[in-house]
Amino acid sequence: MGQTARETDDIADDFRFLSAPAHPMTARLVAYWHEKCQGRPRPERSDIVPRDILQLLPNTVIYDVLDGGADFRVRVFGTALVELVGEERTGMRVSEFGGRCNPPTNADAVRRRWMNSMSMCYETGAPAYVTGLMSSSRRSFITFHGVSCPLGNENGKPAHMFGLMVPEL
Image 1: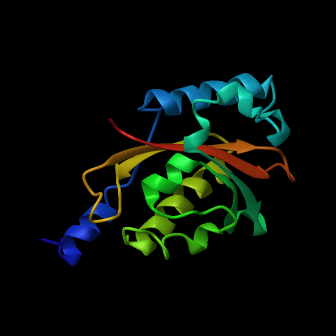
Image 2 (image 1 turned 135 degrees about the vertical axis):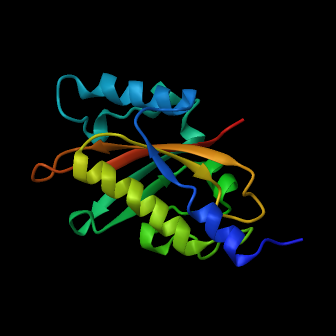
């Protein structure tokens, strides 16, 4: 039996920010990010070395900041993320997320969640930690954890974002 529109809205509203990582993989990515800062406010994109974080790569994402943080384009979208969200997002803008998910999802909630997370990270210049239930009614039993970390410097603001999303097991 499918969920009602109200139940789907409740799932979409479950998204929330956290003050610290709540999953070992998000904590590991943030520790790596801090290591790469080397006394700077944030590392450069070129400081991220994939072989250093092989176990995290399937769940990682790298974005370019567009239009002063008005949108973000995905450069890298890990294979585990494609399976988790049901959509290949490499090359997409956050404003385009959710339209081709399999199983179908609440595209507005997906876009709002990712945009809120990225915007928080962009504005504060610090990692943003999030959690919630998956927005697909067929996966609404899955709790996810995520983090977005700023990279680079463009007029005092991040030029890129580096993040991770992982299901709670």
